Length: 320
Image (cartoon, rainbow, N blue to C red; front, top):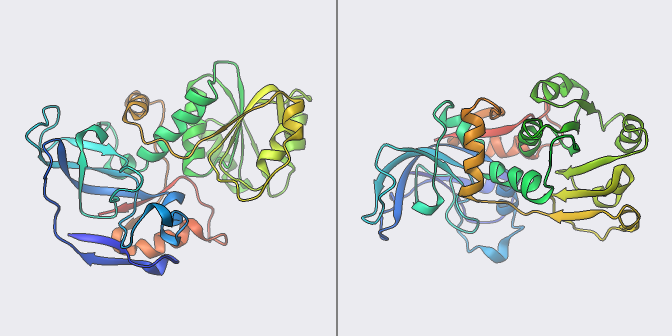
């Protein structure tokens, strides 16, 4: 089977296509899945360049999204059968999705929505659970709240905009001017070009000094220290980004702010909520581009390159 293997940490060039044996079910609760599509997350290139080296042993197969068909099941598996369409996120630290066949425990699986393609389904698992965790579990968004999603054009951002609107929330987001119409079509009420405008000043103007109830951070930098300047009293900041440098949160204290730190959320239970919203037509996966898995290096280059020929919008998908 075709598999992308990382034998040394580094840039996209370390992603090498190799032939490997198809895995064999050894545990009665395991399921063998034919991978039809996968996608690229920032977590994938962070693993590739060695950011999480203590959690892995080389060589590595990374990738955190799978959409495909069950090929075989262990003798203890009763809920699933060969031919079932599934989507899920391989557990962090385990063998990943950049491969033709993937072996997993049945507890990882979710039923793939019946109204989307494999490519669309592959764009959802990791960000689906993560966005639900950020907006519903942590921020506890409710109808009538306001939210600012920093980085609305990314995979997390495009899904967060849609789910926030389903929850009845007024949505602000940031993105390049060329993407404003598309972000509004996803449900954003106000889009701020953070390259040309000061988003803190814009929020203060739009809210007449009241600020935002919830800020979702997918960008990083000085967001943790800057966010309270645009936050309402007793507001929340939920960040997905690691924090390499200390930041002064004195302004958060003045706002009685709450901070939540989310790594990723690989939960089948939370993905179930996303499946229902997709099948009801309330949300739809946003795909930036599709590459064959053989072009994995080019696909990784696109997600990392700050000088793209066109802005990134949504997820980069790989067909297998």
